[in-house]
Length: 352
Image 1: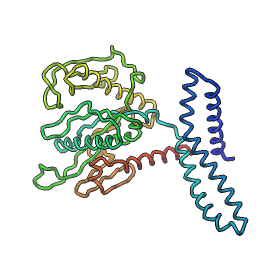
Image 2: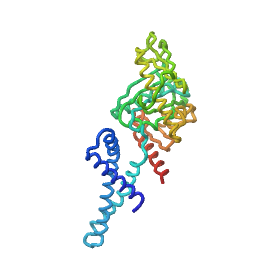
Image 3: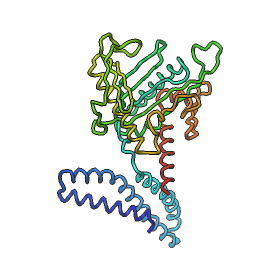
Image 4: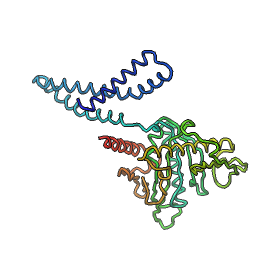
């Protein structure tokens, strides 16, 4: 028996042990823990059952080869089964990879223009709309927490809460510098300009995840001013929260209500603090939130949107798709699926 097979047998045995425990009348916290562990194991156990069934079928088909009358039937079945076995084994290995506890969470999306002035702000607004369309297509709730626009219709800063199951798992690879290459509408000479926008995707934090001491906060209240959202008004409803130990600052003026602005600002602050905690716990992740999006310099980029050539290129996995119109409508799955597969392959390789 291989170490892999022995590991699978232990998983099946553990699932049976949990089933017996639950059937035996476990209650309270013990019941909750056992139920949670079993629910996580059940999809893997089902795949193990498929694998064991396929292995048994292979053995039966190989036995049939010895019978000249059955060989013709057995050979194609055996080939199909032998092709299926590695795929099943791979699916199980992926399912057994350590899970990022934040993967099932909702997320906070933050988008800001970086290099490129008005053109960067215009593309930032378009990127914000891309993620809104993507969220709507997947049935997620997309709530704008803050949206500060420019006179030309660009975006100074956009923050949204995307609520749904597995949002962070799907969007976490979108964090970084996005570069756009195109001829701006204001360019009379037809020259291509290069601009950049930073995107940060943070797992949403619950109050139990991050304990925020009120004594660590400086809260300033002021009047909203300038172009800054559809609800800007002249009362002192805008809120700026500074977390003194980390220096993180969150300002919110989207709502007319000071109370609502404070609640939204605290939600963003908790997400940023939670991501900072995760970064310190996982050395492979960015050391802090700033490293996630870089400086916004044109040379730092994860993805390029080249309008003259109609292509979108993800530089981390060397994937280029000539479907920029569809991407601009929120069709991101091909990139996200490829990035997820690359991440899984890298983690599987690290275990070998």
